Length: 193
Image (cartoon, rainbow, N blue to C red; front, side):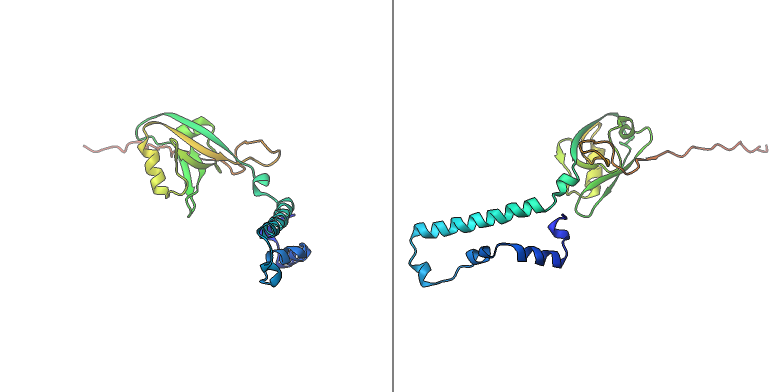
């Protein structure tokens, strides 16, 4: 069964129709003489009855809807990038969403990130040197990455490839690698003296 958020209006109506009708009656409070003549103990028992009914509905809802974390598991991995030369950079291409999720789109060939073999396209950067960066603007993340000299510890969220659960190989996105352009030297033109 699909998640409730993906149900059509007809599926929601069918689900609501099939719920126990006593729940609606138990939740709705009517100010009647019968209610006024109840003891505190009886009122507490009615509250407990409604709570049990709500618990049953919640448990049924959990059982009949899919949990996205079960169908799309992920894990966190700490990646240490060391021996970063000044001005070299990490060699990571990152694209950020409007709400501050930072996803690796590729690495530069022979960069510290590429040589670690642990950062792949599709990974999400969660922390830089134990500081959470989710929600940050991309420019602040870049400033944080550039400010750290010598080494950086990244916490990245890995998504599994397709197939067996628990197999956290690189994400299905191709790990794009950028190669620096080769400098072509043309033969020197003869000069006139």
